[in-house]
Image (tube, rainbow, N blue to C red):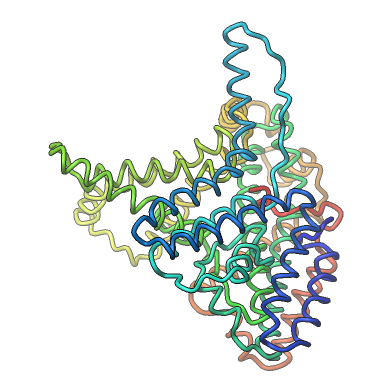
Length: 503
């Protein structure tokens, strides 16, 4: 059943849930929320819901074992993590393994045909498995003392966040489940504005660009030069609007019922470095990777290097190795494909290069008296970082190494592209190539410009709070303009699911 945030089904589901939720006493709301979360996932995933139930049960049982056996809690922690990783490996990586084995056997001349086992991936698998692991680790650290089944189950299955995050810390959510929340007009209206902005990002921009990018990346032979470059840039905008749109909607629905989840995005395309980008993009995953993989790994590597008394910069070596491994894990978390591993490795290399050339950059700044506060310098950093990030989406979007190579080859192939050197000729060629009308082109430009303007203003102040302080005419004119854009200019004919739901 289609219960994506951008579906009528979900709006009906959430409306019915909200009426029931605010109609009953506060003490019972946690159980209603759990029932709604389970029902939501069952309606979406059907029989694959058993994987979620398995993860909840494993997490609860081993959390109790960790609490009750503190002398050997690490054994139970390790076992609980491994058991949670089993379905993640089985459903996401077994197909990759069998494909690679099949490729190897074909290379050796042993033709076994296609593998018979192809498993459907449960919705939101990577997200709720990571939440289960988080629950176990936080229990092992002593941050969760009172283990209750309803709390563990609700934390893992919480329906506004189960499909594509955010991956909150357990105590951040659990402490709010029992909090008394009334139907507050200001909170509800604020949440609706956030939801509306999320829908604008998703259905007005991302879904409008989706048919164009799908057409380009599914027919690479037909696009080269500037058309391929535009395709990559459009996907760069699409994935941002798609995922940030989801995050705004999830944040808004949670706020509606009085639960605050982590804000997963902070205008990442205005970052001035790759390190800053990862502090702004998919923030909850970035924090998860840093806390549970990068830091423990870097400490372990540093300890090993010190014990062996290797004559190298230990801090540099541990950072480099841990960064590369962490980002490869990040890539593989997104999907069981070599292209995702390369995507992660690409970012790992950029982070390493940033460290290695840190002293060089400082020396150049000092020598040429470069001021970071200079607007031109800031803009140059933003544009360069945006370029590097845009390149990364080539690896992310591609299914094979061959496609990656072809896209880069097409980008640098400019032969026979533009027959007319004047502006109108170029625009006509673009429209013809992408199968667009002037109306669609202009609407896309206008809406992307609105997005960019809002992001730039948000860097300086909270635009939602600033609008609230305006007079009623200006305030409601802006709200209705946004609502009308969503209703009349949303690309509902080409409506797509959220990209990150597949992970």
